[in-house]
Amino acid sequence: MTNYTPKQFKLKDGTEIEVREMKDVDLELSLDFFKTINEEERLYLRMDVTKRENVKKRIQQMKSGLVHRLVATYKDKIIADGALELSQHGWEEHVGEMRIIIADYFQRKGLGMIMARELYYLAASAKLEEIVVRMMRTQDAAKNIFRKLGFHEEVLLPDHVKDLTGKSQDLIIMRCYMKELWQELEDYFSDMRMHR
Ligand SMILES: CC(C)(COP(=O)(O)OP(=O)(O)OC[C@H]1O[C@@H](n2cnc3c(N)ncnc32)[C@H](O)[C@@H]1OP(=O)(O)O)[C@@H](O)C(=O)NCCC(=O)NCCS
Image 1 (cartoon, rainbow, N blue to C red):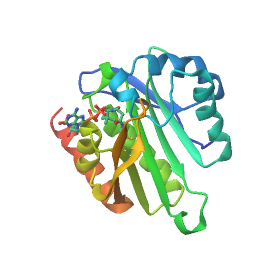
Image 2 (cartoon, rainbow, N blue to C red):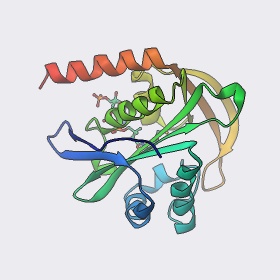
Image 3 (tube, rainbow, N blue to C red):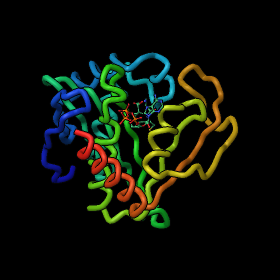
C-alpha cells in the first residue's frame, strides 16, 4: 500500500473521474470492471480476469508491497486499473513494470495518460530509474500510447507468450527512463492545458 491521495480529473470529453488506490473491498467492483473489457483485449491479459479467484489474487498481491495498484472510478464504478510492479530481484531493483487497462467506453479520452502519470508519481517515490512495459505484438493501442510516452521497443521475443486461448504470440518489451517519461508527460499535459 502507498500513501496515494485520491485525485479528481476531467477527461477530454468533460467526464469527471477519480483516481484512487485499489482497496481490499474492491473485488466485486473489479470483477464488474473486467466484464466491461472486450473479449479481444481480455485475451492479452496475463490471467483470466473473469475468474473471481484470479481477481482476488490481483488484489492480494498488493500486500507484498511489490505491486501498487490504482483504479479510476466514475459514479462508484471502476473504469480503469493501473499497476506498478516492483522487482524482488536485487539486480532489477531500479526497474518497475507498468500495466494499464481502460474500460472500452472510456478509451481515447486521455485516461490512459492520466493513469500513466499517476503511476509515474508512485515510481518516483519508489526511486525507480527505469520503467518497462510488456505486451503482445498485436496490441497496437498499447504500443501507441507507450511510444507517445517516450518508450522504445527494446526486445521482441517471437512466440514467447500465449494468449488466453493458448495461441502463441510475440512478446514486445519496451522501456523508458524516468526522466524521459516525465518529459513526455509534462509536454502532453501542458499541451492539453493550452488547448482547453
Ligand atoms: C492502451 C490503452 C491503455 C490506452 O488507453 P486510453 O485511455 O485509450 O489512452 P489515451 O486516451 O490516454 O491515449 C493517449 C494516446 O495513446 C495513443 N492511443 C491510444 N489508443 C490508441 C488506439 N486505439 N490507436 C492508436 N493510438 C492510440 C494515441 O496517441 C493517444 O493520443 P490521442 O488520443 O491524443 O491521439 C487502452 O487502449 C487499453 O486499456 N487497452 C487494453 C489493455 C492494454 O493493452 N494495456 C496496455 C498494456 S499494459
